[in-house]
Amino acid sequence: MQLEQIAIFLENKAGRLAEITQILAEHGINIRAMSLADTADFGILRLIVNDTDRACQVLRDAGFTVGRTEVVVVAVPDRPGGLASVLNTLTEAELNVEYMYAFSQKSGDTGLLIFRIEDLDRARSVLQAAGHRLLSGEEVSAL
Amino acid sequence: MIWNEEYETMPRADLRALQLERLQETVERVYARVPYYRQKMEEAGVTPADIKGLDDLRRLPFTTKEDLRQNYPFGLFTVPLDRVVRVHASSGTTGKPTVVGYTKRDIRTWAELMSRTLAAAGVRRGDVVQNAYGYGLFTGGLGAHYGAENLGATVVPISGGQTKRQIQIMRDFGSTVLLSTPSYALNIADVMADLGVDPQKDLKLRVGVFGAEPWSENMREEIERRLGIKAIDIYGLSEVIGPGVAAECLEAQNGLHIFEDHFIPEIVDPTTLEPVADGEAGELVFTTITKEAFPVIRYRTKDICRLITEPCVCGRSFVRMPKITGRTDDMLIIRGVNVFPSQVEHVLMGIKGVEPHYQIVVDRQGTMDTMEVQVEVSEAVFSDEIKHLERLAQQIQRDIKDLLGVSCTVRLVEPKSIQRSEGKAKRVIDKRQL
Image (cartoon, rainbow over all chains, first blue to last red):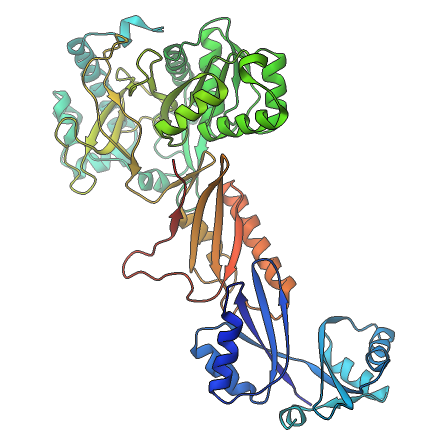
């Protein structure tokens, strides 16, 4: 059930995002999902990739500050209310979402929600108990 | 106007005799009372008896800020603490301030010197002196205050800041003299323009006495034009006495007269520490010859300048120093506050995980100095959450403000984005056009 996201520190400078994606492309690493959080001065790029270890390595080699964070990925039916039902479950359990982002699968019938939650273990059991499907790292890599 | 004709216009030969007598007395005193000075003189193989002429001054060891730091806080005082009636302090290179002390007589000397300074700028009894130098541990506020009172002027001890209120008081009280840092004078001019205050019509301001930071002839011209006043330059440093070490005269506005009956200036090559040829530039060194509580022997100011020995039209016989042209160290003066890059480093090292890869960018927005501290984000402090990084930036900002007394902005930058140089890291980018 372990699933890690990588986060990369970015200054707000032209071309930095392109540089990162280029490095990953050159090493054959596929981006499964991404989100970019930013302030006036800097940004944090968060990525789910098919090979986390290698992505960290090549980005570090290129001089970036890289962090790894465990996240939880939930698969929901890609239709109205899919996200709402997951969030309701978390709210009822009083679990606070630090941030989240979402992406759709190629086949188009499932949406994947990535959550960063302080108490991951409890979040996992609460979500599973409510019947939500959680994806493992292997499943995400195999997408 | 010359405040003290007898001393300020003393013939050079008499002045030299007076200096020697006072120097000998000072050297004897520090040798007898301060173990640190005695030890340094013994190591240099010199005793008070060797000081037979003014040229023998160069046989004495130098004193540096590091010596002051090692004797923090009161180790170099030559009198017991119960004779010290005042202490002041300025920021030091490693977080510890430089502490200076004054006896009752020192306070009187200082007031006399600041009276001379203000009189040289044309300030007289009947003037309303708005003192916008900061009051507190900084020597500027109280130093100028006592001098203006001693002169008999009406002092408005408003201290720095609250610019709108400064302008209101200036107008309501009919202030004729402004004492502040030159950058703050320009800041006041900006706010006046915003408020629609016309200095020529609405104010009685006549002269400004500006110091505590380096400024240029261009700045002088701008201050004079925008405030409709004469702008006079003064020089001082707390280690020597505070403001009142040297001052320009209104007549010439050309070089600052050093009050040589109290301080002996020397210019030395900062590398060899040998005296430079007459008129050449080098590091300015001062020996105090009348101070009681905290005399300094050959104190290295790190300021670069030269001495002008030609007589001045004002009649003062003292040598003059032109504006300071630079520093031998990396000290910055930001809004009148001394800032050493090492202090910023000290703050960064105190925060877990922060590496000392930083750069300080100093600029001037309008008339205010700005300081941005760029810090590289290492993996140890990196977080995937914005709020954690923002908190880090705020913490650095707060700690710098607490230690240095100056506010700055903090910018987090990518690792290795700050240029690494081969030798000494380039810590400071100063974009100010003085």
